[in-house]
Image (cartoon, rainbow, N blue to C red; front, side, top):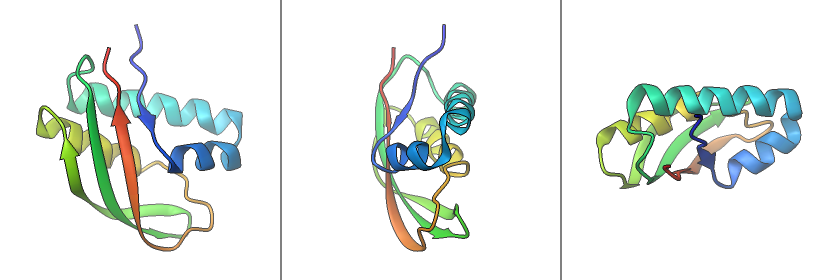
Length: 101
């Protein structure tokens, strides 16, 4: 059974710009990050602050966390590494929500 993870705000824009094929790939990467780093049955909400440049995020750090373990913070950073950012540049905040099962 797959456990979905949702990235608020930026994900909706990224999926709209990237198209359906990229959306499926992004969902698969999100599931991989969550399974690798955290308990997929628990919920968590993390806000990252990242540098956006050339369509990618880098140097992400956790600025707010409501997570039952640090593994969710690692999973959020893992997800941020693959989020397409189109033309965004500068420092941005990325809210990440893992709903749990």
